[in-house]
Amino acid sequence: MLQKWQSALSPFHKAGLETVKAEWGSKYKIQMDTLLAKWIVDDAKAPLGDGSRANGSWAVKQIRENARRLAEDPTFNTLFPRGIGSLHHKVSQATLKALAQKLETAKEEGEPLRVFLRYIQARIRPHAEKTDYEELLLNLPANLEVGPQAELRTDDPGDAFDPNHVKPGTLSPRSKQLSEVDRLVRNKDFQWKRIAELLLEADKAHQKMLLALKIRELLTPPVPGRWDKAGGKYTKQ
Image 1: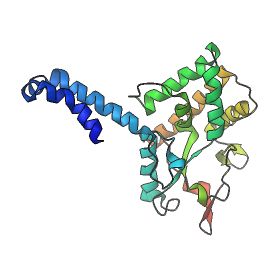
Image 2: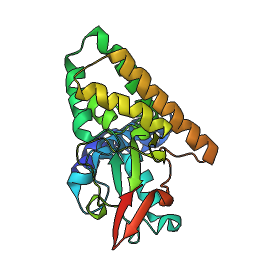
Image 3: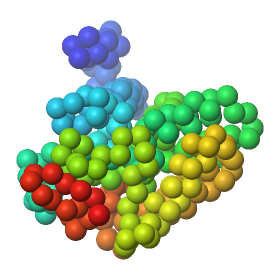
């Protein structure tokens, strides 16, 4: 960090205090704001603070901070008695990484998915200097749920699909769309336009939930009633 500050302040030092003061609003403030914004972006892959870098290093800053706020909220202390939770993917990280890898070699046919992911980027990393499609796939808000720590789940699915249900045998609107994405990718059936449409529909369902709850966050809050607890372990209904 010291080297960053030395590098950042070097042009200011060379210009001199009086010049910087005189041109602060028109020139030097813009330079400093640009540098600070870049450092925020550079920090976007820091871990969630749950004691395991492997569990959180993929999460961008805004997702990570939103998840932490939810885990620390006393409203959800039945799920997070120590104020610590995990971010769970419905479509697994492994499946999303396979999709991202295939997208790298897709030509014009992959553009519908790229357009959708850039739309997501504007929401979760508006100051990013480049587009990392794998990172965006891993951070799709509609595909994420803050829940009990993975090691406290009796039914952690690993790389399998991890849906939500509105009632036994009936997937939630988001999970319904995402389950089809999961099926297509696992079958190596890369219908790019269809995948983009399904992810957009899942995102619309996600936004509708946030609107109904009247909250301005990236993630929907946990649903304690979705989890059964026995012997300190949790099972999703």
